[in-house]
Each structure stands twice: as C-alpha cells, then as structure tokens.
Image 1: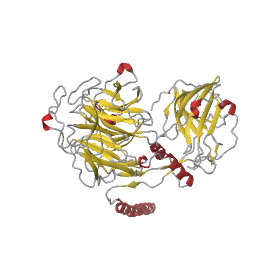
Image 2: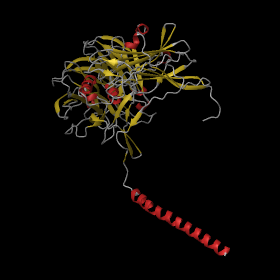
Image 3: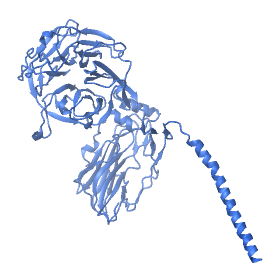
Length: 610
C-alpha cells in the first residue's frame, strides 16, 4: 500500500463470443470476435484463454493497417493461468482487437451452444494490460462477431490445435455423465494406464516371491511385454573395481555364474526364463529389439553385446574390445546403455563413465556417427557428465539421454544427432539416473533421480510432459525408500518398474485414482467445482462495445462438499453449550441489579422530597 499515486493502472480486456453454435460431428467450428479500439493506448502483458471441453486453441490479435500481430495463443485445456503476452504489441486508437476460438463437435450428438454449464461451451480471450492511471479504464470487453472478410486474413497458426497430454485434459475438465461425455473421454484417453488423474503408487505385493537379485543395473520390456531384469549376481561395483585408467581389476573372480538376465511376468513377478550365465562381469544397461534379442552393456568388459534370448547364451554381435577402454570408434570406456530403432535397426550407445558421447551404429555394427552434449547456445555448451541412460522416442524420431551428473535430460534427432531440447528441473536434485518414454498423449518421460553431493532432494521417480517439460507426478516406494534407483521402464498398461541397485530390488508402481483434495495441517478441503454463470442475453450489443465503466464477470463457486476437518476429537461443543446457557443468566442478573438501583434511587428521591 502507498499514499503515492501510481503512474499506471492494470486492467483486463475480454473478447467473448456469445452466439457461436457448434454442430454435432463437425470437425472444426470457428468462433470469431472483433472490435475497433477507440480509447487510450494500452500495453498488454499477459493473457488467459478459456473454453470448455470442445475448445482446441484460442488466439488473440491486434490488427493495425491490415497486419495481424499475435498477442497470445494457447490451448484452453492447459492449466488456466495468465501466460506472458507478446511484449512487442501495443494497442492504440484505430486498432482492431480480434480473437478466434477453434472448437470440434466430434463426439457430440446434438448442437452445443454458448452457456454456463459443462455441457455448453464458452469462448473467452482475456488480455491483461496496463495504461496511464489518469485514463483509468480497468475493464473493457468485446462481444461483436467478426466479419468473414476480416477473418479471411487471420494467420494460419490460429487454426492449428495445440496438442496436450491426457493428464492435463482429465485434470482440468469437469466430467458429466452424458453419452457425449463418455464418448469424448474414450477418444481423448491415449492409454488406459497413463491417465494422470491417477497417481503412481507402489504395488506392495509385487513380486509375490523373492527374485534373489544382485545389484539391479538395467530393465527392459521384450516384444511380449514381459519385464526383463539385468543384475550383477554376486559381483559388486566397488571402489577397487577399476584402476585410474578404467581397467577392470577383478578379472580373477571370473564371470558371474548366476543367471544375470531374468524374464519376469509383469503381473505377479514370477520368473519365466533365466539366462546370461558365465557371460558378464559388471552388467549395466539392457534393451530388447523387436526380435527379442538383448542389447547389453558391460562396464568391466567395455563392450556392447547382442545376446540371444533363447536361453543358449549366445553372443550374436560384440562391439568394442574386451577389457580394453578407449575413445576411438572401435572402443568404449564403461558404456552405460543401448537404444534400438525398431524401424531401421540402428543402435545408439551412451558412452559412458569415462567418455562423454553418444555413438550410432547400423544393425550389423557398422559405425555411423557420434556426438556430444547439445545446447541452444553453442558458446555455453556443457559436456556430458556420465550419459547414463538412453531411450528412443519412435513417434518423434528422437533419442534422449539422462546426463546423470549434470542432472538433465537432452534429446537429439535420431537421424542426424541434431540437438532438440533439454529438460532440467530443481526437483531432480542435481542427478538424473535413468529415463524411459511413453507416447501417451503428447509424450511422457519417466525418470528417476539419484543422490548428489551438491544437492539435497528425495530419491523418487518423475512423470514429465515431454512438450511442456513440466513434472506431472512424482512417486516413491511406500514401505521402503529408494537407495539407488538405477533404471526405469514403463509397460504398455501404464505400470512402471524401477530397478534399484542399492536395495537389490525391483519396484512396481501402478496408477491409483487421485483423491483431488488439498490437505494441510490436518485440514482437508475438498476440491471446489466452478460453476460459471453465463448471462443468456443475446441482444445485439450497442455500436460502441468498448466499456468505459468496470464490468464484473459474474461467476459463482459452488462448494461441492463441506470442508472436512481431520483432527483428534475435541470438547469444543459441550464448552460452547455451557457458555450459551450461562450467558442469559448473566444478562438477567445485570438487568435485575439495574432495576434494583433504579428503585433505590426513586425511593431515595421520594424520601428526600418528603
């Protein structure tokens, strides 16, 4: 608060359609709004879009001298916050304000009108602005339908829907019980197990019997959707395992005699097949190709091996020289993981603990290319610090790497190695150990972090939206804590498995229905359902749509359930009743005393007069 007058005042300009009709089954319906601006200059700084379930994209523009300048464009299905506007756009007298909402009628069996219920639709573009306070117009609105001639020139981007994950769709939209609602849900849900209205919880009864594992280093899914576990048996990676030149110092122990590759039923954890005896020294990463061959890395051997899954323990292809570290195209130095392109058969190798690169080979092992860390700013490129885990994104033709010690995920074009994007979040705590991917929605990345000497963060798993880079969910075991989550894989049914090298265990997580409430300090407040009241006035607005007086958007919030207080039983109710019973007695006593005083004064005055 200040007593000093401020030079500017903020306000909201609302562009809203009031007479749009969305026809059932029609793929695209546009709602266009436009008004001439005839007031003082305003400076947009944020915008918000709003529709109900059928809205795909909402865009707002300023038109000046026939040129369309974007103020903001967003999917109305994303979290409804104000997003930064294009700062280069200002609005002045003579400009035209315009907005378009793109709807789809697919899944509906009747016409949809503009209205206030969840079965109706709305088309709103809110623009926050500031202006000189001496002009002081805190709210302006526009409800005039735009002419077809004007909107023939709208930029093509306004007609392109913005894809979002089903987690955002389901968390934002109120769901009714109509047949239309059910059809819409069926068409928007990509995979039944990956609806992020659900939270991943540990399945405490999995596996049903002990798997007798060593350090779990890698996980994969075979073509039959079975879980494949790669572990180290009775071998351990310790401080004495390698010398300063990264050469393995415990060859005298011989290879691991136990079965290092276990094929497990993902439903109950029962072992279906076991292989990989007397082959490996320090297993690390594993993946399965479409023919169910295993591609594995062994950090002691410094090799990448293609192994048969028929139980005969045959090595079909070996890349690198056994027990010989190196940095040329024929050697690796503690390679960590392998990703296989199901279409081309090309393989990608993350190399590794003592190199900082990704190598690409053809299916027969021919060297193709290699690259290091990427950056949008080449002057600030930070090299990999242990590229630890790889995953291929088949729908995007990309390969992503967990850059462990840099605490980040980087993605590259699989064909060229061109840098695409980087995902980094403080909640990772400085280290990302492993990643996997699901094409559900617009793409989900699953990751696990690790202990960092420089940051303090709990060990857990994360679900991230590939497009927005936002964390949608985090999860961890309920009975035990992670010790060293080393690899992660997601099944086609949405089940997530995490291999922990520290606890020598594999954890299974499945989606549980999210109880949408907020709980703090023992008080649980149920989610409030927003009920938007829409004034069904379809009278043609006056020519000057611009409002110079403040117009409040009428909205009511109906509380779905009364607040529930979770706390120990209290004796506040009897105490309140006791107070309520004592209070009238006190009041009566005071009145009686006052009456006695008045009587006494009257008697005294009569006595004195006589």
